[in-house]
Amino acid sequence: MQFERHIPPWINPLSMDSSCGPAEAISLSKTEIQTDHFPYSFAGVTRFVDCSNRYPLGARTELVNDMTELSRWSNFFVIMGSSAGALIGLQFVVITLVSTLPRTPGQEQAGGAYATPTIVHFGSVLLLSAVLSAPWHGTGGAAISWFLLGLAGIVYAIIVTRRLRAQTAYRPVFEDWLCHALLPCAAYAILAASACAARFHSHEAMFGVAAAALLLLFIGIHNAWDAATYHIFVKKPKYEAEQARSE
Image 1 (cartoon, rainbow, N blue to C red):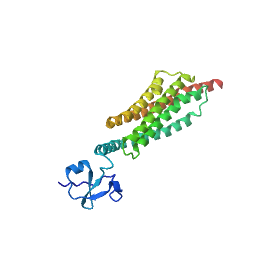
Image 2 (tube, one colour):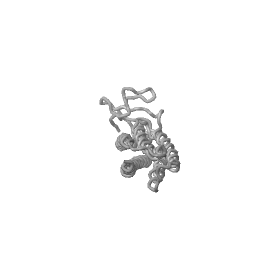
Image 3 (cartoon, one colour):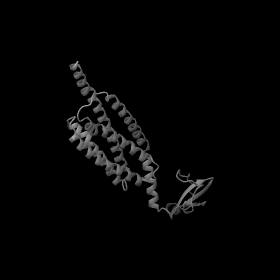
Image 4 (cartoon, rainbow, N blue to C red):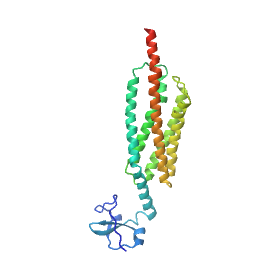
């Protein structure tokens, strides 16, 4: 039985090393293809690559599956990364616009509890999208990266919770605790848990990573909008009223 296949995109028949090089073969048995050889068609001749000494069959299958799983999500993370980068730029615009308002006591502490975490969440989504768009050979290295990101995010969410308690410029309500402390911590925990599950359940793990990234993006959007409306509809009228009374 003869088998002909096109060259896979990750194989270059002109630059094979000695341990996994091309060999002439016109007829390949089904057993050879499944165990020791990877067939391809080049220049009208059916050849095969003998990779049996480098990768066992299970490892080769797992490697291809992991690469396919990451490639399926490439468009999603390109969109997520682009959105996060654009929103980071808008945050700088908002900060510039509200910088004309007078400073109040404790405003620096409030900025560390409310403004900075929003940039961090957008930056996390941007970093995660960049990591998952890199040309990995499998999910192993990517999973380690997003596990470390999730772990760092959990620690940062705890720090933000302490800042919320310590700052005196604004008294947080339930919505603030939910969107600045609880949900970010949950998103980073999902990210870390997905990394642990990626070894044996890569398909489901990628959905967990996507859910965590989407949650962080929407948390950042909510927090940015909440801060902008607070400055425009609460702080600015108070400042204008104080100016009117002083005149």
